[in-house]
Amino acid sequence: MASETKNKKKQKQELSCSECAQLNCYRQEGKFPDFCLTESIDDEKMEAVTNQYRGESLDARIARASAEVEGTYYGKLTRVEEIIAFANRIGAKKIGLATCIGLSEETKIFVKVLKINGLEPYAVLCKIGSVDKSDIGIGDELKIQKGSHEAMCNPILQAKLLNERKTDLNVVIGLCVGHDSLFMKYSDAPVTTLITKDRLLAHNPAAALYTSGFYYKRLFTEDRNL
Image (cartoon, rainbow, N blue to C red; front, top):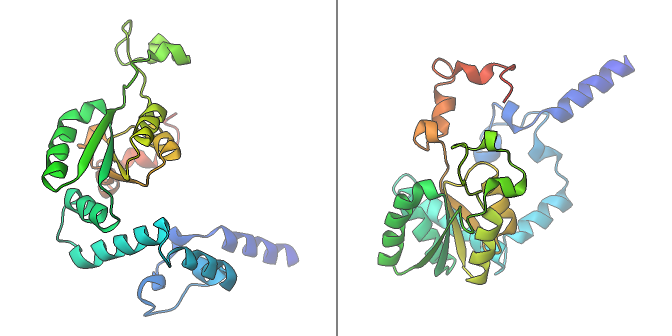
């Protein structure tokens, strides 16, 4: 009996927001489930985090600017426009662009839009430095085009160069999965994303989830050796 109770407690602790059907944390128009993370957070921790959103720190200004853009323009602006509105509200003038080389044309258009809106964009492509993949131990069989010079993506250098420019806000434009993680890790400035790369789905990764019931049923196959 004690073992069963312990197992149930463990199962409850492993439940998270993905199992919630109430979503009461948003409007508080219902009740919290018994495994709710909000309910489990102690008052001291909650207050400490909430305090980070108060005052005039960068965290606080970002939080307020984000809420203001959301509340003012919900469903009215494109993400391109939301980034501009957000940048204006946190006083960001220098905008760093960490872009995939495959999205250089999109970056050029975005640069024009930013300049028209009084911002100062500065772009660094992912292949900066032109270091061959073999120099970091990637075999020729793992290159897209075998037997050729194929530059590695260099997100750490992208971040360092934008840090040197002392950018106020950096925008990711289509960096690969993982490369974006490294860029965000080394960026001094706050980071937001304009385009999330998904070559197969025209950079709309949510489409795989929307069609998982029929077209992309393979998402639920376990033995795909990804």
